[in-house]
Amino acid sequence: MMIEVCGVTKSYGAGDATVHALNRVDLSVSAGEMLFLMGPSGSGKTTLLSIMGCILRPTSGAVRIAGQEVTGLSERQLPRIRLEQIGFIFQGFNLFPALTVRENIELALNLKGIRGNESRRRSEVLLERVGLRDKAGQWPTNLSGGQKQRVAIARALAGEPGIILADEPTAALDGTTGRAILDLLRELAHEKGRTIVVVTHDNRALPYADRIVTIEDGQISGQGPEKGDG
Amino acid sequence: MASLAWRNLFHDRVRLVVTLVGIVFSVVLTSIQMGLFLGFVRATSDLIDRSGADLWVASSGVVNLENGIPFSERKFYQAQGIAGVADVRRLTINFATWKKPSGSDESILLIGVEVEGGMGTPWNLVEGRIEDLHQPDAVIVDELYKSKLGVTGIGQTVEIMGRRARVVGFTRGIRTFTTSPAVFTTLDRARRYFGLPADQAIFLLVRLSNGADIEVVRQALKERLTFVEVLRTTEFARRQAFYWMFETGAGVSVLIAALLGLIVGVVVVAQTIYASTMDHLREYGTLKAMGASNGYLYGVIIRQSVISAVIGYSIGIAISLAVATTSQKTTTAIILPGWILGTLFLVTLLMCMLASVVSINKVTRLDPAMVFKG
Ligand SMILES: Nc1ncnc2c1ncn2[C@@H]1O[C@H](COP(=O)(O)OP(=O)(O)O)[C@@H](O)[C@H]1O
Ligand SMILES: [Mg+2]
Image (cartoon, rainbow over the protein chains, first blue to last red):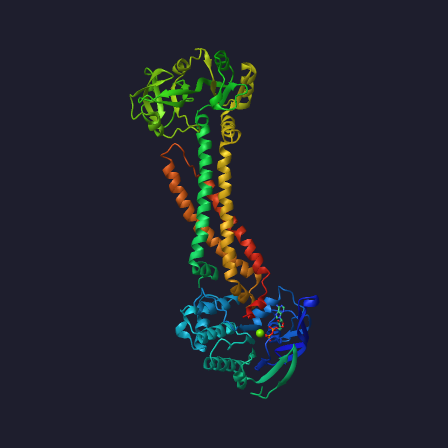
């Protein structure tokens, strides 16, 4: 199992203001699997994704990433897990506007200690893979939404993480562009045995899933391989 | 690739300009004020520092050059007899009135010196010679004060304390801290201008013989001459500078202005760096999510402030050096020695780093989960 979430509970705030975002969630995702997390707004999808991505600590429960227990790791150790294991894709793309397309990818490679000619070479390969080789020198502001998300995918792939976590990656895109992005993600999941978790509430995305998990009020309310229902 | 720090800095052009203007303003203000202070210190004490004497003898209680108290020349002869003394020269110094050829009056600092012996005499002569002071009514002035003294060249006559005086030479760069320019003449003539008895002097300038112990000679002079202060030249210079800079308070305002310059710099830079950090918060969050350590983020912020510091400092110092160079042609010199430039560079760096502290604090507490918020 690439990701194992066992009995995870997450509460925000304290006292009367406490919000129980997740309640005893169990979920495992295997290598090469493309899992969709669905559910109404406020149901806890982003919270669960953040916990799987080691950027949020559960209130209780355990999380294992590639077999390693991460719940007990310190604030200093967690960034290393994210760096080595996980690539993120965001609804708002989160590209660095002052960097060119290629530099956005090189920055991620640099973080992983890949520099100079090697990072340049790898960034070209990654851009090739998402079909944006000719945009290497462009500024992010000059790209369309779909192109920006492709750059973000290339950046998430930099350094070959085993896990890609995407929060509403198509929400800011039109239907055709969104489907192209999901196509790309699916291709990636299968080509190198990557684990991909996509949060979405877009039903048109369902045909791309290997498995669909629905959350309601912080609890898993259903899961199954059946596609396209809901 | 260019670093994120560099790119972010130059991406926000307007903010970069504001930051740089803040740093440049701060560097210019601080360095000019420091340079003015040093210029003032030199103007107060140059007459002492460049006197060529090892020891100065003054009436006891005298703390500065301009307020000396005359004493009998007997002390002058006594000093000559002391072991280790190679040469002694007398000097008088008083404020006096100088009537310009146009008829209006100026206050001057009249210095009566012994032309021979090379102690207390004017230096850096660009016209005339020191020996020309032997000519009747001769005085030497500094070219910086030509217009203030109403003279344009050698041979012009004026009046000092109602008596005739004639300009025989010009020096370059002998400034005084008070607004009264230094005017050199012979000891005898100075005494006559003031109506000082012919056997009185105000200071004795002592040169030691080779190998003499300065402290031994100083003690001997103090005991033999009685009711005198005997000061090493450096000590007297320091006392003189301290008197004018701090006891009169004249230097304090300059130092306060220098400090204000620094504070303004820190505030402006902190402000712009913080605003920039806030603008890039999502990027910092993204970096955190991508696995960057806090140290990496501090590196980005600090590199931005260091780059700003280096650019701002370079522009600021270039301006200050230009101003300082121009000031050499005026009666108020701005002196910027290497150690001031070096210190100010370190202070600017420190100031910019200090300015990043708030931003660093903000980024440290940044929750990477914010990247998923709309
Ligand atoms: N930082 C937070 N502080 C307090 N409450 C939060 C925070 N983040 C999320 N929540 C709450 O937790 C619940 C789940 O949020 P979230 O995981 O973002 O849901 P989803 O992504 O499914 O819309 C919601 O009620 C939300 O208001
Ligand atoms: Mg969400």
